Image 1 (cartoon, each protein chain N blue to C red):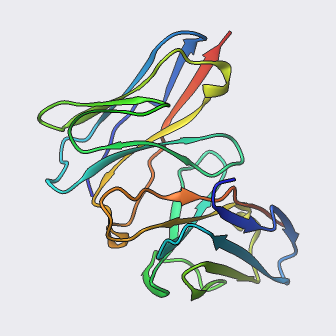
Image 2 (cartoon, rainbow over the protein chains, first blue to last red; image 1 turned 90 degrees about the vertical axis):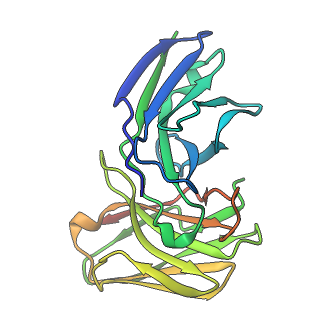
Length: 111
Length: 114
């Protein structure tokens, strides 16, 4: 599985756009990039998934450059409730791929 | 409502007790997972089932015993646990083989072993 590297923590303010970048230099051809959000004492929640270029949904955008060696999760106009841990995962969508979570990025939104 | 329901939400048990955690998914998925999340540590994959067959056992001690009677239900049977087994136990499901099928998690069972 491709190893991912993301910042341990980030701070931002309400109303700002937050970008969290994940590095995955050894991403394979059939790997997808998936981001999850986790609040304390809850299970992670799927945010967005992409393979290349840009993906946007009602929650976030995911930017993936042509070489796919990194990706950026963009959260527009964050609020206090966006304070959470954000995980970047890279891998093929099969159970045998052993979906492994890293330490994630602890995002703290300040008023 | 996540589509994946775990019970109980909280559980306190002694080291000599036997208990079971239950997970039920209403999403029509065919793969189910158990993860363990200890304080300040990443999620650890414990077991994976696909079409009710175990496909992954991630070197988990035998005091944890999974059971998947059908594609909608997953159990984790616990016996003679240790205090270090105290953690949040998370169940997840996915549609195996589909390119755009991420994991759907329940809200977990907070287990305390005394």
